[in-house]
Length: 139
Image 1 (cartoon, one colour):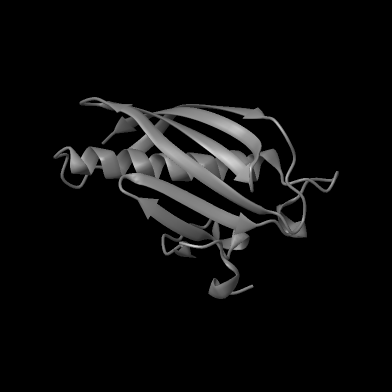
Image 2 (image 1 turned 90 degrees about the horizontal axis):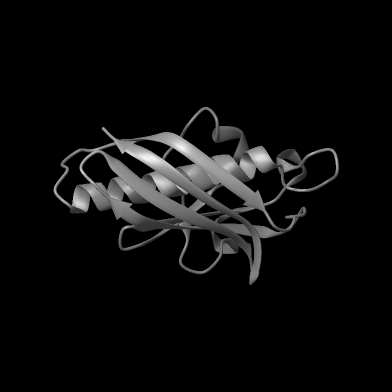
């Protein structure tokens, strides 16, 4: 899989992590201070039923929301702010299967001095696979 196969507007994701390295290739698109991530589901991403694993979905939604919270905090004058997850909730609505492109559309709902609130819709085309919400501590 290469960059030319990514959804329109996406580029290779450059932020590396020991957790996400086995899930590569990952792709990213930024729209202002909202981050989107994407990947094409492979067997290595699936549970024993052949669906994209809920842990993968939640971890990448957390990542997209956290990036968005940091972008918003920095745009608001927080300098080199970072974010850590305080809480996260995921509702699984549908299933992603091998070959599906999953896109993680994160939106920051509100940022304060120490907390940020975000949501993420995980989509395959127009189908919503999951919705997540999270609270982040700005550090």
